[in-house]
Image 1 (cartoon, rainbow, N blue to C red):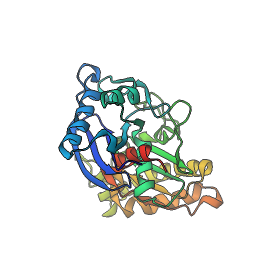
Image 2: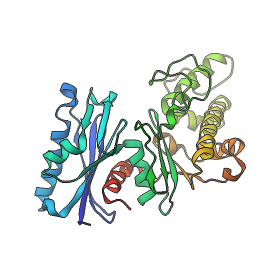
Image 3: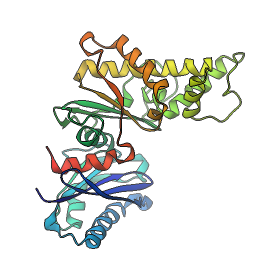
Image 4: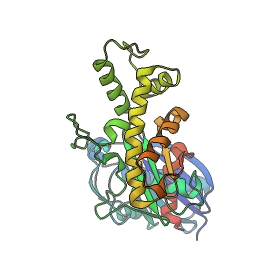
Length: 315
């Protein structure tokens, strides 16, 4: 094993990049803008330039670099190919990233994974699930991301869509999810979903007092209001955690992980989220899975770069 590796978490606004020891020590991290112009034609060139620039700055030769791992916001096949257009990358996609970026880097090994999957891989390597062999990560942000690790391996599936927990269909719903389906978990348990459902509750209960009424609120405000005793906000949190608890129970009944990790901005709500979530999970889970821990992820925005490096260094 060579001494160094790079991890890249490619997002729609910026790419987070980390220089690591292959033992898992993060040496330095930085960001570069994601240029989505012209269907993202400059994305891989810019990533190559960022890695090469850091290698030059640190005096690293290619012979010292084990490889570059990349997390991307879309499905990935064979740890190499992004088979479809990534919606938030300006039309970028349908690339053999391993081959193209590896060629730009003079043959340095490149492996690719879905961003939610590599975040889960990061948490099981150096984060909240360190020491576990099997764990599931759910990221509650603008959407709901998921990553499933079983026996140390990412379950990415035949079509690269493994771990798409946010699109588990939960109930009948007239509003469409961003994916085009109806009734996805993401519509209820994402930050966007919490706000949407809270607004719906307010509309349906015009005579019920609520501190959020008449304000422009975010998901954090809903959880804060519930924590402070607002009954209608507490009802929304209960409904949201009931929906999420049922989805996690269905996942537990399928893969029986050692642990669930909850990341993303919504996870920072703390006990007002986790306490009811754990109780609802127990109601729906198969008896032998009911005590599966549900804990906050701990690597935050660095989970993706850690997991991308784990793609490279393996077990």
